Image 1: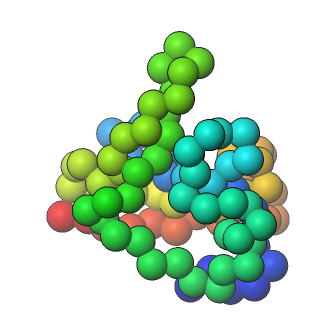
Image 2: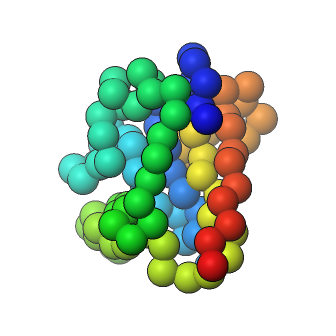
Amino acid sequence: MLGTNHAPKLGVITPDERFMVLVESYVQYTLMTEQAFVMKTSLEINTRSLEGVTFNDGEEMVEPVFTLPGTYRFVISEGLAADPESKRTVTIEVKYD
């Protein structure tokens, strides 16, 4: 459940500490637009098909998100590199086996 009035960007930190972008205006591939994401009050994800963006030497790489068992931390924020103390930064943990 996302609730209302949440921040517009979404990323995920994988169990091996890789950061993947899911919703962000500066990447070419995105799960949805920021405008569509802020309207969502909940979000269902398919663990078999969810893809995110990582960066390798500045190049966007689209990769599957759920590749390892463990805890995935989804980060909803005004800016994905924003100060974690921000009141509008929310982290949701998901266990995947």
